[in-house]
Image (cartoon, rainbow, N blue to C red; front, top):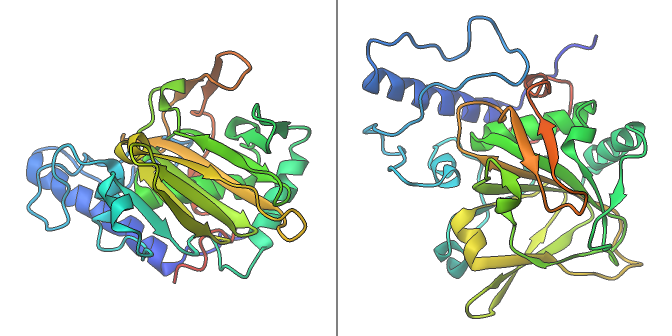
Length: 303
């Protein structure tokens, strides 16, 4: 078995910062309870439990009650550096654009490795119900080391719990995603946040303010992450418009729907709205914690 690849120092610092802040908060709010940053039995399955949520701390970066999981993650002093966004986007809710979080913009090896492992999983890619691109859900990719690492490291970066995940595959610039709001009500438990990692060819992610119709274009390069919360999703719909088919190549979009909780993933979900009827999916057998310490090169550039 190959040795585990060290995590990027910035990612380790961010993870430790989140855990440390929550640990200190648990000491302040529950002084008689035994506390531990990591479970004494090690990391098993997807059952890594986080200490009590940061609610009543005097720290300058502490979240106020009622704030979204995204805003709490962004308040961490070790959160990755973000690109500036239009003030009107920020007024609609929580959103963030992190450049080259997953990999350097000029390095396509992570996209190629993920695509290779998707193909190794068998005949799992299906035409999306819109017939505009291909798609595969995460429960078909639990054997992919690269996908597991991407999902696990995104969850730790934002300090949230997985509800559902999938990969949208755009084979060329002619494939697209039509206008929509993320339909969180199609999952139970209901997500409160979307995280998207772009790999491969650069494409524009376009947001439209529902009341006014004003549009905002955000270029997503290889390795970029864009995330938003439920209030933002209510005010803005989004799309990936078609580009020039001959000039735009393969793009993979890894999408996570997440919720504020105390585990790496919720144990199980009900998935609807896929055109295939309700689906019951279990995550409690997926060893997401191995993705944190795996040899994957995902997030290595965060130094």
